Image (cartoon, rainbow, N blue to C red; front, side, top):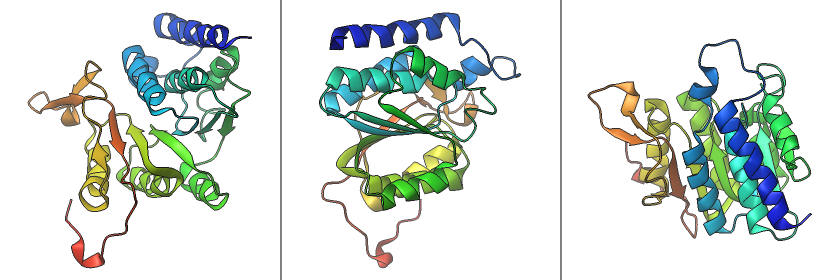
Length: 235
């Protein structure tokens, strides 16, 4: 199968998911719309990873597979030897009944994708110990501050210097607070306009608050550095 054929197959599954929804959902009203990455944001994520030339991507959270399909489309487009997509989701086979993984298989992405059904706080240290180096990461797991912070702590060591970390739901105060530390104290920098034209949402879902892009992309410093403990900046 040619690269174009493989990419068309992924696009068809992505389009069908966006317009028809998944074959099954959790027993929560409107769950797919609330959880899944909107198609337009997925397009922007795909284009960002293609521009980056990403060949190895770590993703935290699979759910209905919308973001994973966008990542997979990018990896197919970039090509190159041994593309690798590691997806971490302890709830895929339980809460989601494997629906996201079934969609990745339908798109022909299961050969290059590894699903790890365990908490990211346990998996990321193992990937680091195994010497994995990723070009980028997409984070859409738990939105509890301490768990987002732990994800970013390990991804800082796994994603190559100058690589990308993209987060979903940057409108949530817990995610924004965790990201702010890595920007203020560890030199991460926002990628300007990476998600311009994407979904907007007011911070904290407060109608009076500023509306921000749902997704946020940050570039790691190159070379990486460890700040002196005296240089801590409250965040």
